[in-house]
Image (cartoon, rainbow, N blue to C red; front, side, top):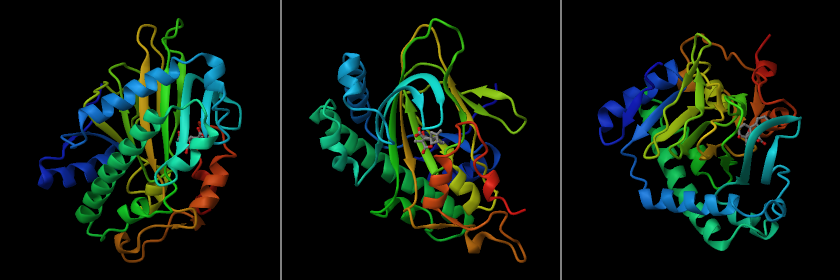
Length: 298
Ligand code: GA4
C-alpha cells in the first residue's frame, strides 16, 4: 500500500508545496485540519442515512437521475451499473432550485446540503488558490468554482453491505470536472489507480477530506497534473456513505492550458473545447472510458 500524501492546512507554507506535488504524483491527496465542522458533516451523514432508509418506492419518487435525482444501481445514461444507490444534485447556487422536483428529500436534508456544499466549495477554492500561488499563476482556478455560473454538482452515495466480496460499487473512472472533494464514513472501499496501474486502497478517515484532480485540471495544466482513476469496491459488513462535491467551471468556459504555466514554445496537448462540449461528450461515454482521448491533438 502506498502512502497517500496528507496535507495539513494549518501549516500553510508546506501545504501549498505538498498539494502541488501530490497533484503531479497521484492526482490525489488527503486534507486534515480543514476547518469544516464535524457537526455539519455528521448532520449531513445522518440526513443521508435517514433518506436511504426510506422505503424504495419513496426514494424512487425522487428519481430517476436524468441527470439529477435519486438513482439506484444504474450510473449515467449508458448502461453502467454498480452496487450503489445515490442522490446526484447540481450544486450551489442552483441546489435549492431542485427542491420541487424531489418530493421525498426532507427540508432539513436540503438545509444541511446547502450549508455543507458552500463550506466545501470554500475549502476547494482555498486549495485551488494554494495551487495557483505555488505555481505562480494568479487566481485563475478558484474563480471558476466561485463563479455563480459554476457548473458544480454534489453526490451522496450509499453502498449497502454486499454479500459478494469485492463487487464493484462504483466502477473505475476519472472525474470530468476541475477537482472533487470527497468525504466518507468509516467504511472501506475507495481505491485509486497509481501511475504503475496498480490499485491502492484509500483508508477511510471520516475526519478528513480527499481531493481528486479531474480531467479539466489535467487539461488546464497541460498534463502536469493527471486526473486520477478511482473506483469503489463493496464490503460485506458495513454500509458506506460518501459525499462528493465536484467543482466544475461555468458551461461556457473555454478549457485550455493556463498561459502563464506554459513554458516558451510549449504547445497545448489538447484541442480547444468548452466545458459544455466536454460534458456533453462525457455523458455519451461509459464510466471507464478515457474521456480525454477524443480531445487529444493528433
Ligand atoms: C463521474 C463523476 C461524477 O460522479 C459524475 C458522473 C456522471 C453520472 O453519474 O451521471 C457520469 C460520470 C461522472 C462520467 C461519465 C458519464 C457521466 C456517469 C457516466 C457514465 C456526476 C460526473 O460528472 O461524471
